[in-house]
Image (cartoon, rainbow, N blue to C red):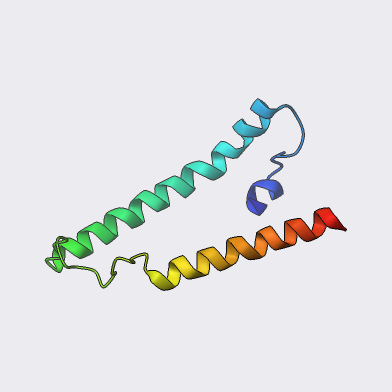
Length: 89
């Protein structure tokens, strides 16, 4: 963006369409480099025989338990107490 400003590009003046057209010289190389990087990453993953699928993550599902319910009830009671205190004062 600084290089475009040095070349005389104007990103701040004009209506919305004119400013959007001024951003095109910046956005096109950005998208090209992003797509190139994605392609390189895909080829590297393929070269290493990466196959996604079942059991490929360490993420575990969270379950709502008794402690969670107690914390929720305490939170609701505290918020209610704060609201009641605000109303009475």
